[in-house]
Length: 79
Image (cartoon, rainbow, N blue to C red; front, top):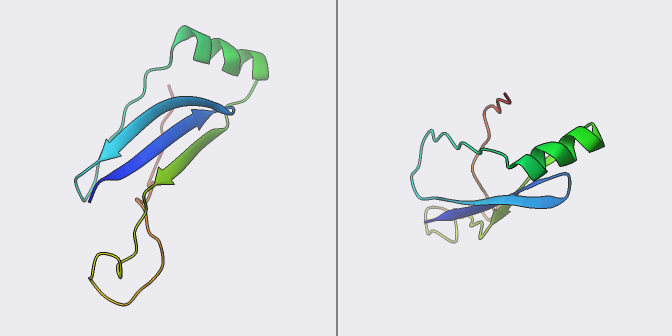
């Protein structure tokens, strides 16, 4: 199944991603000049990941686990 992710920075929608593969994936996001300026003015970067269309193992008929699960974020790097 596809996992759609919406990323926002300081409350402003930044990017959408669609992940189709299981396993380790690297997502890269180049910020626009406006996004960079907004972070400088705010003096902070609150990054939120909204995982859309999450499913449970039960929804996928894997087992009886009803927890809605999404991808795990192992690390985030900022440059």
